[in-house]
Length: 262
Ligand SMILES: NC(=O)c1ccc[n+]([C@@H]2O[C@H](COP(=O)([O-])OP(=O)(O)OC[C@H]3O[C@@H](n4cnc5c(N)ncnc54)[C@H](O)[C@@H]3O)[C@@H](O)[C@H]2O)c1
Image 1: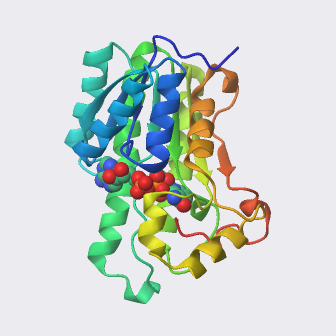
Image 2 (image 1 turned 120 degrees about the horizontal axis):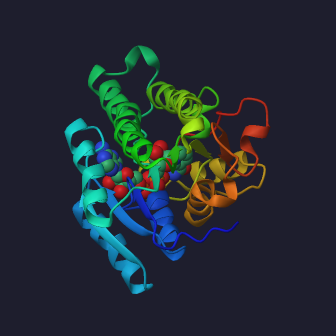
């Protein structure tokens, strides 16, 4: 049993940046052919260039996960291009802005739900159909520690990430006997452009995120990408339906979601 993925095919969403870029690179360095999808065609192409420089195989595909038809087409593209779909990392997401619930604009609520929850559902729908035809596959979704506990001022984000955990567990049970595993990774606060956008240049805010982790530091994209790819690998062959917190110990404390907004 090992993490060799030679000849197999992975699709990653939100792979133009942060955690998704790191997991796409890790899938490729394990030997998989990777369909690198992102809302930004330019960012996806940059990830493909990094993979190619490292000697890996990847192709870029522009995809907005909140668009049902685009997701269906992306899964079909992966199968047409590389012949199968063995792994998927459904990772694209957005944090939204912090609001007291009574002040959340409907448009902001709907946007976070469309990307973070509908997007994961659309991906699962078409990936599971393909993997069911093949009789095998492994999927990891990206949630957050905000999907394991309430998160101050981040109601839409926390609700959607809890939803991703529920969808994952249900998919895992429904497909366990069909040779398909589905898990969810819950990152703690991780140093990515999404976090930068949320905290801006505030060193104080950054220090507060760092000190809220028992390890007194942020997670790195490589640590998160490696965990996602390992969950898809054969080494995790008896693991399904699990929410793996990759959070430096944050969720082991009482009030798992507090202090985490990414
Ligand atoms: N960074 C953190 O602290 C943290 C913590 C917990 C969970 N997460 C989750 O990790 C995942 C990745 O976040 P990140 O921190 O790497 O962020 P990031 O901003 O670095 O990357 C997110 C990528 O997703 C893409 N994207 C956004 N909306 C999209 C859409 N509608 N369709 C397709 N692609 C889209 C963006 O273009 C971007 O390339 C997200 O689901 C996020 O909620 C992040």
